Length: 204
Image 1 (cartoon, rainbow, N blue to C red):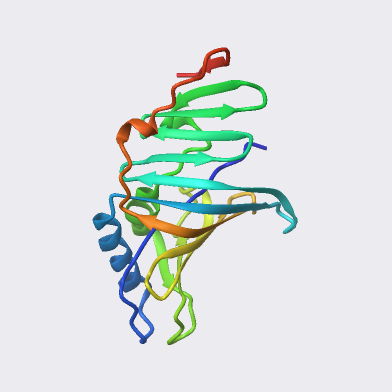
Image 2 (image 1 turned 60 degrees about the vertical axis):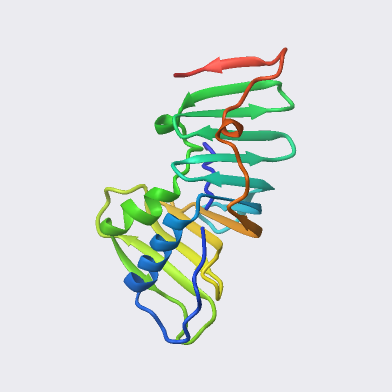
């Protein structure tokens, strides 16, 4: 099974009334436009179709608009400059290079926030007056590669958790903590420069 890496956004003043899904989505979109980048700690769990946790990962995550990201884990790293993705296995001393559009580990906040909602039913599934908001996207047809997406937001509208259920009922749960916005992150950091002596497999 190819491991998809889903990651996951961002901020707003909390309102005590229950917002509709479209109202909540609009605020997330507005905030996302105002944030250039963020970094965080992450924990990811992948559950199989029977609900059993099959994969667990954790590490650090940095994201910059237009699909630039860095996922750093103990034994591996994934780096994207929005056009190319480098999957680096530290133990095997090997890096696989592929196009962003072709790589199963590619992730785009822009797709989930700006592109997919028009193809989905959008709901706020949190309880009324709850400080925690939950934005849910359910595709209107079978054209997308997921059955549902849920995005948890705290009272400041910061994303703290994201769950994606794919077409095979595999669930990807991704949690963020210690989020820092608009850090000084150079674009050059989103290009991977292979260390000497490692194997390079270029699939582009």
